[in-house]
Length: 207
Length: 207
Length: 207
Image 1 (tube, each protein chain N blue to C red):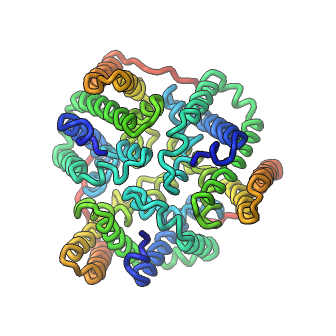
Image 2: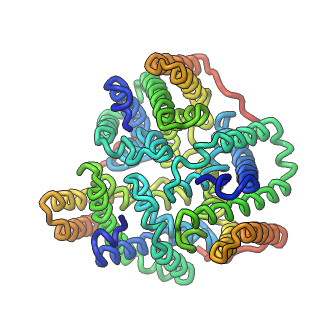
Image 3: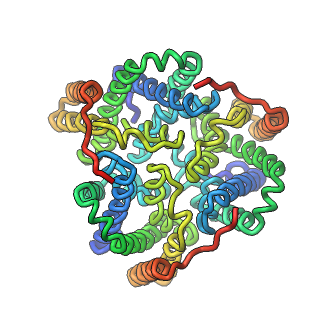
């Protein structure tokens, strides 16, 4: 039931890379909130894995991959230590982190949608699970440091993940899953890059 | 295992109506916190479904009804769009929303208790699951917009849900489940209306 | 699958005592945040049981012990009422509460690790589940009253739980589980007492 069994070593590597990048974002938020070393590691794990863990619990795939396979904890620990020792440099490379974050979102969105489809969810809910996989970690990260989640307020983050999910569903129905996952991830990444560079945003309502 | 299978089309409709009303409360909170359109939809879904999803995960009914049946997402989306386009009117009809909210609580409390009893939980814990179903969405909604949950601070909200649960348990033991669910929902609704109109409150301790 | 079945009446009593102590901490935080009587009971239950419930959901042991056995709700209610009626005295006995809290952490860490090992998790993830059992309740308590979780910011709390988990894993491998659980709990408790009395802390990074 785990990502690496169902979609090969490439997707497994992508999943761990996505976890690492989101864990970096968690650790960076932790440093800003004056967490100690354990706090950094804990929020790194939360940011990197909460989305995937929640998805696995909801589709009944327990224990979740991030619990049964220690690699996810390993890359989260690594991210926590990297930020602890080199946090000034992380800040300097903010645009690099944003790019990695877009990559992590893309990978999580396609992997999450694909996994939910295999578990028998309907297309609409599978896409929702893909979005949850992509945004769950960032939401828990922000709640833990006492902020309204960025993803609920900022540009087309979740919409890019949903677009990737639509491509994955089409590929699943047409029996071209691998091709669709690659295309979906690229579309999501492209939408994120455009949203960041052009300032694309969703409308919001005056309170 | 889903509400509509276990208690007929009437309960299913009631469940969706409760989801819609709680989703409205989520979207309204989201507008106040300056969320974008996706944020509104996400917090609408969270407010309408977090209680039921948590209950289903805890009693082992995965995937939860709100995940396996896209209707719950559908009414949450609808609520998000309604608030997005007509939010000023929602504010004008605050007392109407409070009434609907009381109705949603009543429906969720009896449906949650009944479902937990069928899953084999003891009466005390089944009532607790009914309360959780009723208040879980509001708690997540408030945590997401960075506030201490209203339900933990305000009048006899949860107590009304527990009273409904007691009636459902009695009806379950006496083999009159349908009658007890209707009576429990009416009792909960009556208690909420009295709490709002008369200002009934639970005591609190000076800090 | 419940704690008391797998490790005898002694561990069951210890589990309930740990729940009671953490529930006290939840109720105390609730009084400070002006929660009403239901709010106190709810946050007491959350603080006493969120760690164990999350662990049980993640390892697939549903319904969790705290849901299927009403004793956990019972001691949480008791803690809520104790704080409601004697809250000034709780504040006076702050060092006593800290000692009990260290005891609760020790008991939860060893029980959580042991249960995860029996469920087939690897040593590293079993220790992580022990830590989660010990800190989960405190994290939810702090999130509910709108604060950054203390455990992510403060001294060697989680590290003490992890140390206990290491001892339990060694004892599990060597087939001396009971001895290892006692030794692990004592080590965790000793580390907490030293951290409190000597001001031991983990390093943190300047933001």
